[in-house]
Image (cartoon, rainbow, N blue to C red):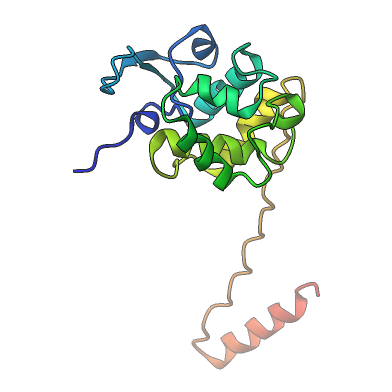
Length: 188
């Protein structure tokens, strides 16, 4: 049976540690990881992919370790300085235009590379494509980047009118005449 990666089991696409920021986004706990590196790594557990993505993005935007840093420097810190070159290569192959010198600032997070970057990071952390839906990434970015915008109005789906009942099958010529007369009276 295949082992589900910790970042997927915990709905934590960035595989971020438990922290006050993780709790801000609804983290329900922290699990210690036995990754063989002896670094005492742990991972926060989130109730939904959206909550985990919100925490991932908020950490990138708010932590002095990552905010306004060059991508190469920030990802080295994120990765605990483990396998940094492969992490950078993985992300660069999936985020068109990103370079080691790309600055991880608000302009970056509000631009076209934000979601592809978050997905690439999640894929690297999981070792495979992360299973969150496209709408989860979009919704999380809206929540974190535009917290004061009004909630989108849900337009109800149009209601289709019920089909007109079919006239009953005729049993006699008189029934046929009555049914025809009733159809002739219907508004057109």
